[in-house]
Image 1 (cartoon, rainbow, N blue to C red):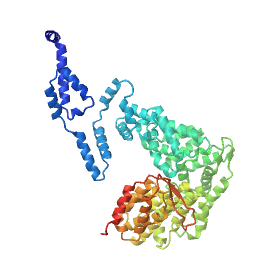
Image 2 (cartoon, rainbow, N blue to C red; image 1 turned 30 degrees about the horizontal axis):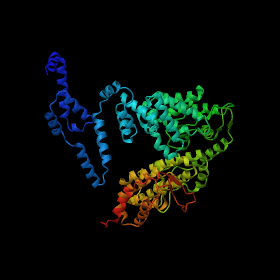
Image 3 (cartoon, rainbow, N blue to C red; image 1 turned 180 degrees about the vertical axis):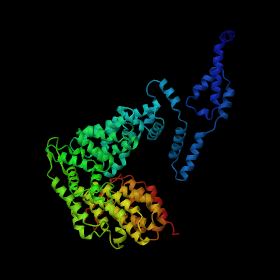
Image 4 (cartoon, rainbow, N blue to C red; image 1 turned 60 degrees about the vertical axis):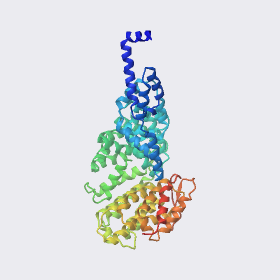
Amino acid sequence: MTSRNTSSGGSGGSGSSAASGVDKMKQSFQAPDSILEPKIFETIALYLEEGGQPLMLVNALSTSYVGMPEMCNLMSGWAREFDIDPVEVMQEVLKEQLMERFDPESVDRDFMSGAGTPDWLMVMIQHPFWRSVIYELSEKHQKCALLNFAIQRISDAGYQGEIASVATASTFVKVFTGVLLDSLDKLREEDDVGLLDRLPDLVKVCCQSEHTYLYTQVLLFRLMKTDRGLPLKRISKELESGVLEKFNKPPLVSVLRMLLAGASSNVASAISAILQSRIPSPGDVMLLHRAYTSENPPSTYFLRDPDFFEIMLSSIFVPSFKGAIVKQDHKEKYLYLVAYAASVHEEDDTITDTSDVRQTYEALCALEDTLSKRTAGTDLTPILGQLLVAIETPVASMALLYWIQFVIRETSYIETYFRSHEVPVPLLLIEEMAYKHPLQQTAVFATLVDFFEAPLELNPEIMMTYRKSILDRMIYLMQLNYAMPALDYIRVRARKMDQSLSMHFVKKVLEMVRGPYSKKFIEGMGQMIEEIVEVIKKTDTEPVVRAWIDEVVSQPNEGDMIQTPPTSASHETGTFSGSSDAGLSTIQELKRRLDEPRR
């Protein structure tokens, strides 16, 4: 005892340090639920070894006990009683707390002081919930070293597809390259609908900065030169739109495009002027016409831009186009350039097949001649045959679509010629376009949406019939594989639409489709039906809905196609894709509501 006291008294600094350590441990014992801390047993042993009082320890641990885990378990049990997923609720609360309290500076300080990858981080990376938390935190704290390190590890673990929408994915070349290649590989297998779903994330990560945009465009340009690489032009164009929206630097887009393609200065300046002003000047068109009718014409790559096609066709076929009226002798040059861009086949840098140019040019000239002789807004029946012939040529079909948009929007055609027992001729024409040219279905759908929402001076009853005609065209698009965009649009519009239109859409679609159904389709259609279920119970639509619900409930857990049966239309039937995982909770709730007594 004497030696111990002598030792303590001889080293007052050591005794003071021990006392300070005991005080810190006392404070830790008084924290809520301290007895549940992971290293509590080691801390208790150290406290007693340093001379801490056992009675004080017992009091601190007992009085600080709150029982938060048990309360969470109790709340989880209650949640299950109300068919609420407790795990999802707890995770959401936890995520909110992390988003609010996360301190990147203190986290980085602790992270930098360690060695190697923390074990807990690798465990988190394997869990979808924690990966989603890391993504959201990295969007908010883009300079956090730990989060950037975690993004790299997530990429190394093979989750490139998940981080395509994360801004920090473009910070590291290796991560960005992995994300880009993974995204392009997935886009390669997508149809036009799937492409619309995946493109926004790709555009977001590739347009984070000028250098990621340049990197991606160079890669896409080289891939476009390979066999069947031309469809990548669509992705390249979406990137141009994305970078223009973010940085508002038109020269960045136009100059890079021409530099990559190696265009001559004259051709590059003429095309850039047309695209930037969106008005083709006769001088620029004449220069391009001379270049593309010479013995060694430039590549059609420079002309094959969706905006270029739209500007050139609108300047000829849309009477209200903002540019000056094009003289007749100049029209031929405009149409020749469009025909050349649309129909030349370039097998490599030296061999060019121009055999289809003349036929395409004549189709455009014939359509222009037909439409120029008609007063806009007059009856189309006399020229219906010529218009159907024009639709056979893809670029002429697009020209006619622009003209139809003008006729419906800016003339009184519908007010003058629409009859409730007939489908308007313009709607029949664009239906034919969608059937003949699947790649034009997106443009056709956008046109139908515009027509559906446009205010017209019709009495309510006739207006309702007109909109039903438009809905029928959208339903036909669903039969042609363009299913989810149409369903998603009507689902969002359902609350603002007259219920009779929603009923019409639901009944027509459910009479057409056959299972198995994708989860997206089930949820979308289920939400639509849910909005009008009380009305459905009073109409002849109820048996159709019940039959569909029974089919969904009995749907086997295999297959990935939603099929449409043959119809009386002359067109072939279509199918559209989806996963077989069916969210049955919505359907079961609908079934319960249908079984309830009518109000």
